[in-house]
Structure formats: structure tokens, C-alpha cells
Length: 398
Ligand SMILES: Cc1cc2nc3c(=O)[nH]c(=O)nc-3n(C[C@H](O)[C@H](O)[C@H](O)COP(=O)(O)OP(=O)(O)OC[C@H]3O[C@@H](n4cnc5c(N)ncnc54)[C@H](O)[C@@H]3O)c2cc1C
Image 1 (cartoon, rainbow, N blue to C red):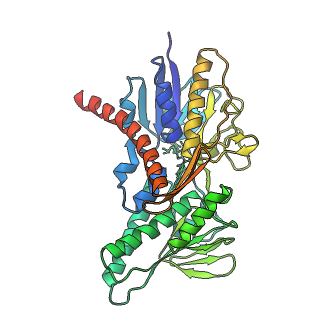
Image 2 (spheres, rainbow, N blue to C red):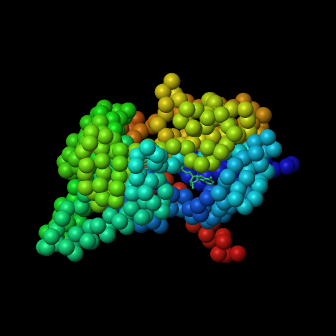
Image 3 (tube, helix red, strand yellow):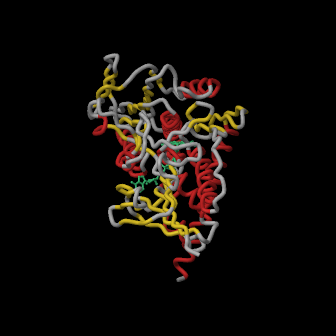
């Protein structure tokens, strides 16, 4: 019996879950392609930046992870440039690979809007690990410089966070909370950190649950974060930011979390896309025109009862489950299932040992919510770590 050749592009939340599900069938021969050698747990970036975690704790080695299966999963660290859908071939920077079924799970990237002068040059994004690491180092160096200056000129550190969505508020809160503890714990005189959150909408977390918005707003203010709603950044230089209202603010550095967009591969693919450039998928998560091609996670947009389902790690994993099930059903000539995905809950970290959450309709905040968030993250990381450790043992025992 011939094997089912399945290629998964992207070892993120959606891609790894798909691999885990499909690998259970020994008849499936799976190749995972990723441009990086690691899986990056973006949901923990706020802890990376505030030194609660190092880069080893927010990454999983994809070679060892894939080696942890029963021999039917191969990882190739190769960037995919395009796909020849008619001839069922994935084209990477190195080679072409045939597939029977294809899963596109390449996520999205930070949208550095071209009409904001200087944005790409002077602002930091955090969606890729190297950018997050660079920003973390810059943050630490700034804290250290102020400690060095302490007692002499001792200027405050000015940080601008542009983007009042989930990642923007989490990072602003974590930096504010971390630096407060850092300066107090060490009794440094210089302890002023000015964090300004620039938000293009009427309030932070636009589109999210009203209670969560209100709780978040209160917490950010407690952390002395200045929120500027209804404002947009229009120009950035090395040390200043100009807003659409004309205000110019001095800054040491700026982090940009103002939006995401499809990445270069999605742009190249000859698939139907929506106005935002995301892959259009049907209710079975198949790309239009190709029954054997599925798109999951942040690179596609899905709807539930006419509303867009927020692109999160949770959504990507739920999509992976449906996608794996539908590939299995196609192989077995059974009917596919339609997705009914909706958010199961939201957990927002707002500084050290504090979070706000809505889980299955119940609101929680404070330390308990923080512990819940940590548990969700740790359970996820543990699952991947066990597989990766198994793979590592196999590699070194050969
Ligand atoms: C700061 C921050 C905080 C967040 N917090 C939360 C949270 O608390 N809860 C939550 O649910 N979600 C959160 N999210 C959102 C969540 O991280 C994303 O929704 C999730 O990562 C999407 O998963 P994915 O599998 O679609 O893509 P990703 O996880 O982004 O993975 C895509 C993969 O594709 C690879 N890739 C891309 N292009 C190519 C190519 N051409 N060739 C080969 N490989 C390629 C990448 O290297 C990557 O490994 C947060 C995001 C950020 C940035």
C-alpha cells in the first residue's frame, strides 16, 4: 500500500498540532518544512522580554521534535518560496518536493506600514524570535545605562509601544511591572520608566470583551502606563515619534505591535485571497480550487456565525485538529467535517503575577488568572518538550 505524502509548511502552533495528529497513522509520511530550526512560542514573548524566561524556554527544536515520532515525520529546515499546485510540488530555496496533501500553516508577520516614515528602520517588532531578542537586549541595556548614570544626570527611559492590541498591552504591562520591581529590589535611585501606549482605536483591545477591556485599562493605569487612544504614529526618527495630532515625543526606543499581515510566501501563492491578502479557505479549511490543500492558522481568515474568529494560537490549534481530521477522511473516502471554531477563552498577562481572563464565559483577574495562563503555557510546552526529548534520545543513541 502506497504511503500518503503530506507536507506541512510552518512549524508554528497550527503546523505542529497537525503533525502530531497525522503522525498517528503510520501510512502517513509527513515532511515538516520551516525556515527556522525551532518552534517559537510567541505567546510567552512578554516573559522573554522581562527576563522571566530565556530563549531556550520559548523555543522547541524542530529536528528533535520530529525525530520523537515513530519514524514517519521528517523535518527540513528550508524556506518555501512557492507551490506548484497543478503539479503538486512545494518549491523551497533548496529543492522541490511532491505531495499528495498540503497544509499551509505559515502564520503572519508584523505589518510595518509603509506610509509611516521611518517605521521599518527605527521600530522593533516581536513576532520573530530574533527581533524579540534584539528588543529584549535593548531594553536591558537601557535599564543598565540608567543605573550607570544614577546619582548624576539620571534621565527617565522613554518607551513607546505602538499598538493597543493583545501583544501591545501585554508587553507594555510586563515592561512597566518588571522595571518597577527591578529598581525597587536593588534600591536604585534612578527608577523612572515612561511607557506610552499609542492606540489607533477608541480604547485598548478594540473588539474584545468590554469587561476585559475595562479591567485591562485600569491595570495599565495602575502601572503608570500613559495610554493615548485615537492616535496614530506618522513618523519615527532614531529618538522621536510624531503622532497624527502633531505631538512629538522623545523616545529611547519603540516597539511596534500595530498589526499583522500575510507573509511573503502567501503573497506568492496562486490561491484565492481576501482583501487583506489572507488565503481564502472553505468551511472544511481547504483552499479554493484545490481539495488536497488546506490553510490553517494566522495565514487564513475564518468566520463563525458571520464574525471573524480572532487569529490566536488557540484558533490555530483548533484548525489543526479539523484539518488533520479532514485529511484523514479524504484518505479514507469519508465525508469531511465543517469547522465551528470559536475562541474558548482569552488570557491576558498584565505584568508580573497578574492577568485578566475570560474562560468559557467566566471572568477571572489577578494572581489566579496569571497562574491559569502559566498553566496553559506550561502544559503546551511540556507536551512538545516530551516529544522533543524522546527525539533527542533517539538521535544520540544511534
Ligand atoms: C506578543 C504576542 C503575544 C501573543 N499572545 C497570545 C496569547 O496569549 N494567546 C493566543 O492564543 N495567541 C497569542 N498570540 C497569537 C499567536 O502567537 C498566533 O496566533 C499563532 O502563533 C499563530 O499560529 P500559526 O501556526 O498560524 O503561525 P506561527 O505560530 O506564527 O508559525 C508559523 C511558522 O511558519 C514558519 N514560516 C513562515 N514562512 C515560512 C516559509 N516561507 N517557509 C517555511 N516556513 C515558514 C515560521 O518560521 C513559523 O515557525 C500572540 C502573538 C504575539 C506576537
